[in-house]
Length: 389
Image (cartoon, rainbow, N blue to C red; front, side):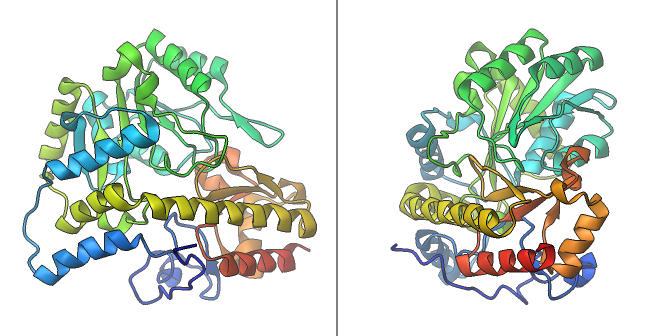
């Protein structure tokens, strides 16, 4: 490979949430962190070089992106997903969750029902509850290790609770599903029938494995496009989360106006210079780096699968179709969520995301971030083997 994903980078003493806050989280200092979803790889060299031009100038003033920024973004989505984004649709925010919160406040009122599908990325739940909306859950169905949507339950919950907004996770975090086009069309059919607005969080869109292409929800929305928001960001793809930039795609002019009013209310209207530079460089020149990264991540998935089969057959790998977050099923051990968490932290010395934080449906599962050098992954699995063998 041209890029070295085996390189170990010491991230301690860098204000890293992942590596420097064990004390604050009450976690043993010798626990290997594989929880929060950032990668242990340096970002693409083209991004670092572009940012160095800003750094060498030494002036970090107020900044706004020019046409080249939008050209890079729209070309990326046209080339990779056959989806045409119009420049005027784009609302820049410091992150996808911020964008979801803005849209939720713009499109619903306190007490309105908002639907999610657990187990799912836990900030969805927080955004709904913290903004005093009614949380409605239509759980995913786990059929022998393969997750599917329960469309009957989805529609029943929408009708029963008069749901106004549906937050879709696509590709899905943590179960790793990349929804098929026909599944998304069924979601569209139900939401259109009952006038439910759709926010599609597609932050992991670039992380899919062979045979599982990602479909941008806007591509299949047809005449319902103005009732859809697509949340995008280079942050996961290129390991830029700390720079805080996302591109929230809002085709409806009236919905964009409402979202801008919500952002104005909290006095937010600009992203940082380095974030703009990094995003443009990523989408202009980061493709080759991403291609090699995906091959490396596939190798990590293969390693996990083979290791579990040979050493921990009671642990089931939920085969990921996308993302770099692996969902492992430990239910065969019969441990409570608290017992499993204690065993991971204090015996295996692994700091993972406990499954129950994604909803009660995740109890007995653990989410593992495999975006790390293979030597680190091997060490983590050996620790797990020692604790569970």
